Length: 430
Length: 165
Image (cartoon, rainbow over all chains, first blue to last red; front, side):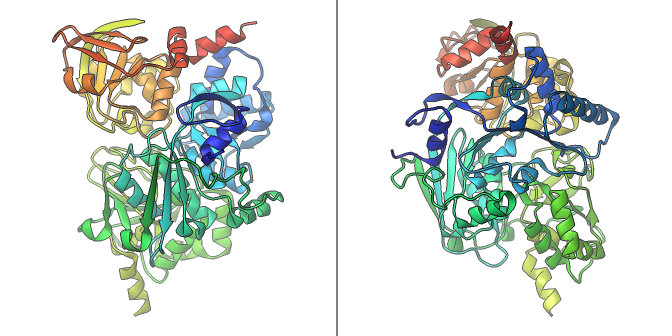
């Protein structure tokens, strides 16, 4: 058949034997996720005028962008969505305090399964490619169409395959790897395309780290991005769903002779020797840490759908252990979900972070969208484990955001300037 | 489907959705009202220059970033009749079709039309005619589904008609 995973899933979902790049297909939707913008979706849906959503079981709504409500306007939005959810009998609804960031909540509650077509009214829906799902972001009106019809047209994307060989060095994470790739390909380097991440480095990663790759592939324009459906994924999903799939099942993997637009081989040990930093104001303005120069930091943020998972809080805690956050800097930590919050508490990570002077924010998007919980003033600089550093993203248009791994963010919070985690770590050891 | 207007502004590459419509205004869900904040942080001068039916011209990857439909709504309800760019980010592209805002992909036109030029655009045929300079440019042809959506005025009217009992 010679199909990539994107082609395979779209063929299945559109009832065809096979599909090829640039064909337009109509695919049935397996899961439709929205956050607070469900209110915009609801408005368009009601304008369309059909009385009931196509399938309330396949719709998931999760509040995360503005939790708890930061304004009366948001409170009214939340209220309108709650009423809609009740009226339409949508069961999978995660209200304030019950979930966390939408992409983490979908993952940890086993909503996503390999081979599914997932759409979300959030650009980082590509995250679910870590579950070998065809997962992509759409706008609110388009989602109203999905709520109406349960299907959507797609142009079949061509696929870029990225094979990562070698080994990640100490302090080098999935974040550094994917920032390096984005810097190399550019903000539009994967526009309209599917990306398959594979190779020994990717197969050696936890599911949490694979989610970082799929999540940030969006920042080079990818429509969808996949990591392998292997034993690691099977065991993650078995724990959360009690269901099993056979690792390597060709329904959830590309054919060995699939046709690619481009195959990129990256030797991680050579190409990504040090932490990578995306400098203001674009995610593809990536430099190795040693080329960033002296940057004093006002705020440091560990969190988001990109890097707010347990392993991220763990490394941040390990780095700050025994230190104090620098007097000029404030460190904000935002667990990606309630589950992660509890687990990080149980394991003592939060205690270590708080002892160092961090503030723990409630699970959600936090300051990443520039609405609340850590807005920057003019002239301020933030180092953040989040996913975007556009002008004014986190506050003033005269502020700047540097994107980095949680380890670099934590170390920089301690040093009060952007530093390699090794510097802080050595101090502990000596 | 032909639209006429003037080029109101020309922008560069990778104009992101935070630049088009800052995140702090995302709680606004009334589409018409989003127009008040178009380019508010990065290019506050543009909004006042837009006359109904005017065009925006941009480089590659216009609309990259978030899925926020307010970015498209703000452009459309500020009065913009169409955007011409070297390329568009995919979610922005789909949002624009869904809200009935024509987008034209033309590297040549993007490089050679100037603010103030009067244009006549045949959206379905993909022809951009610059009346000021007399030059004509080809734009990438639209998928039939895109034409259908634009002719209906967007996805809501399209589906309303389809499902009208």
